[in-house]
Each structure stands twice: as structure tokens, then as C-alpha cells.
Image (cartoon, rainbow, N blue to C red):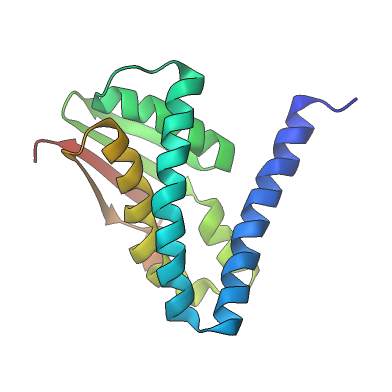
Length: 161
């Protein structure tokens, strides 16, 4: 009937659209700050659910940084990030993103000027929740971001720092 790629693309686009529409409707009803505050609450919970499901689907039982990266790669692929793991050590991983579906959506909707504020709130919340599902000692940093005008986003995951 339909191939898996078509179904996956339909679901991915629906997921992105639902998130954006939800945010804009809350913003209309309340304001941007209230919508962002509620979005943080949603992503904190959704990310935990996603991380647990990724662990289950991939059969990951460990709690190492390498296990976290393996699970995150499922999310990165599903959401169609363009990325490279540029450095992976037992206690530190660095990932470079050259394309982000969320900043692309903001650009397409003429809301790119809000990207840094959204990223300040959502990126550490989302990836921090993923990290805590593996080990609460894993820290998440973004020393470089596209939404700040850089060519790439750089994600650093560290344990014990």
C-alpha cells in the first residue's frame, strides 16, 4: 500500500506541523513568553518519553555516553538533522550540525528572529532530558549555534565535568 519511507515522512511532517501550530495558537491566546514557557514543559516530558522509546526500539540497556549518542542518532535521523559526530570519547562527545529542521521551520515561517530565544529554552531542555535518561551526570552544552549566526551548531555532551 504505502512504503515505510512515505509513512515516516508523513508522520515527521505532521509532528513538526503540530508542534508549530500548537506553539502559534498558544502564542495567539497568551503571548510568546507564555507559549515558550509551556513549550519547555512539553519538551521536558516528551524528550523523556522519546529517549525511553529509543532505548527500547534500539535495545539499549547501558547508560554510557556512547549509548546516549546511539539513541540520539535515531532522533537526529527521524527529525532529519544533518550532523556529524566529530569526536567521541568515553567522557566527551562532540556533534556538529549543519542543518536543523527547527531553525528551517522558523526561517520558512518568517520567524527566524525568534530562533535564538527558542533555542535557549528548548535545545538544552530537550537534549538535557535525553541525557538524564542515561545518566544525570551528563552535561549538555552548545558552544556554537546556527541561530546565533554561526555556520554550524556544536553540541558537547560530557560526563563528570
